[in-house]
Image (cartoon, rainbow over all chains, first blue to last red; front, side):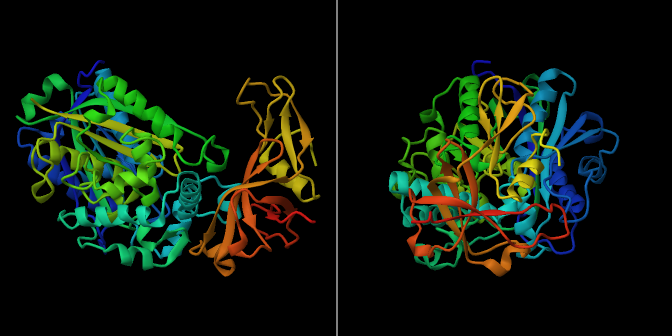
Length: 391
Length: 134
């Protein structure tokens, strides 16, 4: 592909992330779709959009499966081919990859790709149990290992191997809450000082409450078309120039290493090769900070720093707004929130805003190339995309 | 009880008779823990059961404070991943060791739970890890 666009984003929409009492996933998604349609007046949704790919993780939250066709109807698109993709927290990153397959194949010129989850009406114990379903049942869940527990196992290994500290891990939360304070769609829009992060209660040692992403309701979507059709719909498309998706064992315990996600490395190599760029050309990234330690591991896997140096990178301020490589300007999963199925395309939504100069108080100046990294579970799925501003 | 099916259920059935067993591919020799019906290295479907020592060292651990409903009464509890002598890795709870004495690299050994099984699926027995006997 050599840096040529695979597909182009012509519009995007997202609900505010937060607590949406009384709304169902279909109603949340309708709001996200409505924003995407109204941003793109030249698009005739009923005529132009031929397919939908929807990331949604859990039937258990609302006792509702079969989400693809349901959401197509509620978005006013009943009749189109609607497909739900499920890869736990990576569900809509995988939906995005599927949308690219559809556009590249020529089967659909315009597709809507999105995701949704409604979680806050359930108790923490229920959500803990539902999220754990994305990990191995017979050896992890069955033995009482939770999701925070899996990332805590990685955190302890990273601390022991590289000397990463609880303070450095906590700095990811401080940074992302600062970014979230600048995002009117973030679930939490307030700064949190490091001492509060460090004083919060343990969820799974060494990870504390403020090391965990938020339980959130929300929906997000983008509209994709063939690169040669993009200018028909908008003067300001954002081009997807690299896509990588990879898998790994469902059990964390079966992996070769506990301080890196092999799937993320495979996927990012695929995406960098396709985009024909090196990591130092990336101007900003949205990465999957489901837990603070994950962001530190991702810096290393994505090549933003050397192996083992992720803790020092966040400490240096390089990944804060104004730094060399701002990461999670939206606030990330940590502060913007993590309605699991919606997260992948919410990352794409932020990249669309940034690369079209619409990110307001959190705008990264002169951003040309962005990267999104969406992870399913403890790393059994990785979906990574690279975006380029239209020149 | 069939011993011919190389399934996770059969792994747990062995566990109920205090045996830790893995599936060994008769074609390429790879040992699978858990056992699987198709060798992920060579695609063979021919295996034999091979006993595993249960002795190993702790690769990493955590203390779970927030647990799903089923495990809430046990919090805080320790879980870890143990690398066994046979170069296999397996996760589980770590019991009867003070949490401040847990250390990456410490020796552990697998023990069989004696708790009564529930009536709900899955009716598998559990294992856990303890300090090896001196």
